[in-house]
Image (cartoon, rainbow, N blue to C red; front, side, top):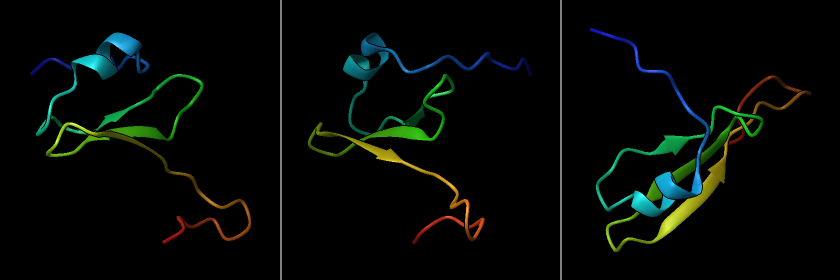
Amino acid sequence: MEKTEKKPLSTKAIEAMKPGDKDKADTGENRGLRLTCGATGVKTFFYRYTSPLSQTHPS
């Protein structure tokens, strides 16, 4: 199986997302930025990060 090269999020990739698609994640300078597309087609951005104080992900 070949590894696919990950690309940063682009406007084209975001606009092409449809309900049921897997979440997308930015691999560029905005690492941690993720995008999901709900059942109604509404796209939601969320940001995952590690706290520099506790070294854990917030709940």
